[in-house]
Length: 393
Image (tube, rainbow, N blue to C red; front, side, top):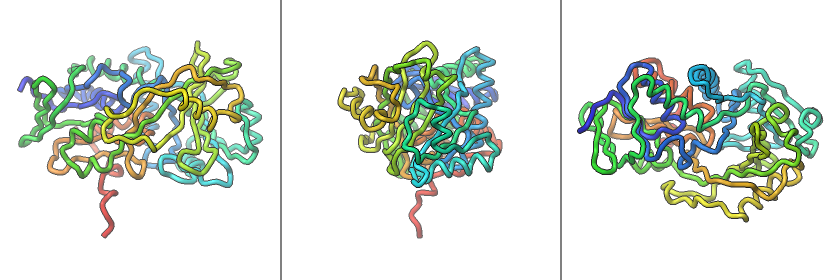
């Protein structure tokens, strides 16, 4: 074997780069491996922006992670000079009489309000009239309820990954790009990691954060059976009046206009210096066991359907046709929560994956929690274990 490390991190996207940085800052000898050169567009950590919000309707166990993530991103901004977090406000809307579903959780707006109240997160609850008065860019039915969080907004995923890798390297982390991991094998009290070409490394621990590629490296059908790779598409449309859609006047939003899991969409303000509004919905039909099998092109029919089914009549200042579209794979669990677990037969590999489409806002705090768990501090990961999938007796 070529080298020995305290921890090897496989996959350097959102969670992997955060974990590598945190372990390096603790003085560990760490190696980060990625099949491509991060930040890149092959995994789930790309697309220019990701929504962040502190009251989490998916579950109150996530709130401490996102609060800590905001603190870490501000620390990284000071250390690197990068612009990572923009707090333009976050607005979540749904029919007041409905029980809209997001990431497997129903009655999402009410759950979000409850989380904000429990954690004293500044927010407002708005009716349709108040939403329309404050944000005339939206054309509402009149029966909506809205949750507005002024501290919400967006983060820049590629910049966050780059910043975390910069700090990791400053603390003597080794980063190998273009290194495709083909084998992870526990050997006694350590782990052997082999990359394409036959080179191998040894470590005391491995953090497996390879997203949809993790299942193929697990060697354990048990955990892999809880992970599904889903093809998602991001679209950018032109704004008729860009001045109305900048971050100083327009929030990030999640608009749940129906009760089904796909009856809604989300979007962002135009980034400074651009005329583009990014929007997307979540779909669950295009499934693969391997991200390499997902179709990466986007057809004009798909973009037209996105506009027709979600944007048209709701954002009158956003126009067709699409300017560009890209594919972003998500790795989902059956219940929409994270999966953080040690595969059967090993106590030296920690799977950190299947963030189910809402992982980036938590990733910086999650990386810190992973580093805490591996270095003996109190862990914050118990609620994400695979035990919840055990069949009832």
